[in-house]
Length: 236
Figure 1: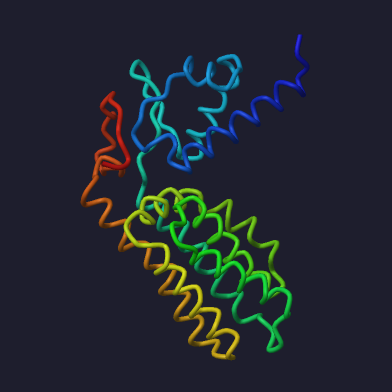
Figure 2 (figure 1 turned 60 degrees about the horizontal axis):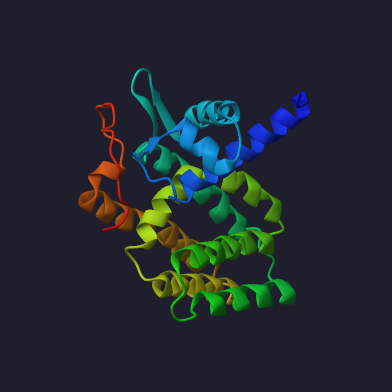
């Protein structure tokens, strides 16, 4: 018989795996979830899968409809806006705490990150990872790198929408925005850096809106109607 600690560990691992699949769009917004299929794919029993789906439901990533089934929640614009609010508040505030003399090693890491962002043929997931590293690095310049954990936890709903939006704008455009933010910061233009960062963080909403116009089935509706039991392709 497995121990309580073992069951908790399994449930935690299943929850983290399924959460990442939802946030990473491997489980597309609106798609149906089968406990049996998920359990088989993860090599676990149905119990930790069921418990994980309930936790994900509390987090707003899954909807459970009695007598119908469980579905990945569609992207909720209000949750996205709330996450953006938290992220913007923290990241903009951090720029005010960046010292006049920026650490050479930290700056070199950011420059290297920028160079990798601009590599030809970079895919969305790799760019997303580098983008996360860059913004965490900006927080690090202010001495508040540990605050990134709070930002990352708050912005999971935003991350789903950002991944949708990254398919609308070439990564090199975002990379250029990153470069201009860093150049302004290094040049001592705190006001300019803040304006550029605010515009950069909000630019994703234009891309998200284009996705919403093209694929409204990926987004939550005001009616909150029961999802249609069908497969939903994120990209056509």
